[in-house]
Image 1 (cartoon, rainbow, N blue to C red):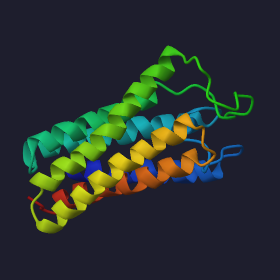
Image 2 (image 1 turned 60 degrees about the vertical axis):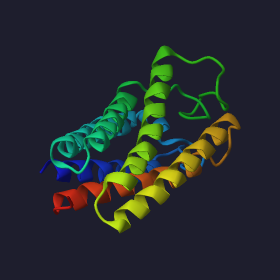
Image 3 (image 1 turned 135 degrees about the horizontal axis):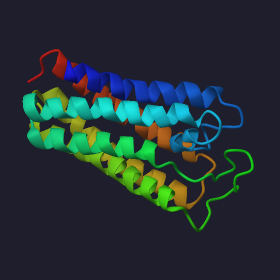
Length: 200
């Protein structure tokens, strides 16, 4: 049951930010990061998405610790889930023109809340490729190890590309982030599903 919770949390996170992002007025998924969805009148949706999905993933991660193929993998996934929760508790500051009236660029000074959000985000974006790398050595079956290893490399490179896009205030910032998040969370949902079905 705990693995199904983890799978649902990973899938729910992606589904919610895709639907909310494409249907929200004045929000541009190609430009704006997922975290910006926690701002504005409908911000509670993404805030809840961070907290609920992160909590569900943490539950699944604890299952990996006690029932899965690797304690270390479970611990890293738990850190990932808790960092998602923290990303919801501490919202980013308004910027990049969202919500309407926010600065068009990225301000040089940030609130403490935003800095804590950034720290949580760093844990999220580092722990998932680390988890995939651990999976490349600990998951049973050659296909899982190959896919996990390739994903780990892709995520490390992709998150680095997102960091560069953030520094450059790229107009495709949101698109680059989504191109990394979707396969990463997809791997996580697939892993939890496989564990629920008996992968050991």
